[in-house]
Length: 593
Image (cartoon, rainbow, N blue to C red; front, side):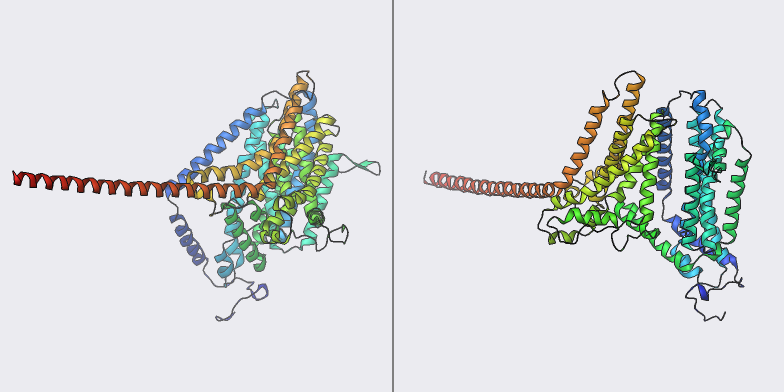
């Protein structure tokens, strides 16, 4: 390639190795890393490590304490041995499908902008340029997976009779295998530029096969063959019985990583630049605690765009109450991938409710957080209106009334998803929840998840014009914690009464004796959130008026005090003049004497 040639696209990019010393590339990266690290003080870095370690230790201790140490019965252990590998296999299929979709869009790498704009367009072998960032990402992912898997294994040891080291090792190895399968699939797909439809179809086939395996469906009188993901399940449950196919999962994961790292140089520059820009914006929005912006950017990253037209049009005449119709049209424009994601989250929440009924209390967090994530999609009509505040002036209705009509279709969709979760919870099998308790828990958790999502969307990003923060800066930290922590906590509240029902049933008391008031309190909290959204503008205006009145009162008081001070000064001057006059009169009298 001539020295003055300019590489502008993948077609012009060099393919063969060029006589450029790789040491120069490493030297540039070392300098850039040194400058980036120099901007972080060692005390700040040590504090971050300390806080992360403290929070991680406290979380693990709380979860371990809440699980309890009641061992499973022999029947329950047999049930886990028979159905557990298929369930874990479904998780493995989902992980591989996520990796395939990410790789078809240029993932999983998100290299720095300088690498994309300069190094990848320079006469340097792309494999050498991208292999080190890929290795760094794989190393980080495997490290986190090992820690998380070991913690899960430690929790499993409290319920199963086998020794703790076996469960810790099995959990760490299974989690690392899951992450390796996902990253390896993504690297292979992006490096070989597998078309997106093909990657999506293959991932959907794996998920469908694993789902049929979990359900135990028979086709033509014969059971569905074991899904490939079962090998990961056998690896995770190795202490209950080692299966030879578990070693195959580790070998396949290692092979995918090796093939992906070797062919990482085939990454598309256009896809890499687009992904790098979006990931940078997502990180910046995350630092501002702006959940809505993170969600919108993630949809762009995943090419999750709405349909051009709603699936079903609800009439063509203009409505005097446009919110209800607009809300349904917004939901009916959801792409298929978003609908599938909502259904999968509802199914996962239902499975978590079964686990809660079976005695694993921390799974209430899984059910609530699953519905909170789903709720961020469910409240899309309201979120679209919040994203375009200038459009509200086009309607004659008040802001709160419009918001209520936009939330109504989202509430209906949330109830439907809650019924899906309840159906999963009450399905026959191990951990089956009673019908009434399961359906109520599913609907309640779905509504609280939607309420938490509404709070996240309406709260928005932190504003520098917040008058409360300007008047009392010390409350800024409290407000940020509330904005970040309250939505997930609110989402989890809907599943907590199920623990009360389980305790009442175990104690022989009526199932809804104490849980009914608890679920009533949960419903009241949801109504409070809806009322806050409806009266939010009035509350804000009241606060502004109160602050203005307080400022005017302080100004009047200051003026009165200033006038009083001026009068006092005048009185002092008059007194001094009188004293001087009396002194002069006394002097004249003395002179006459």
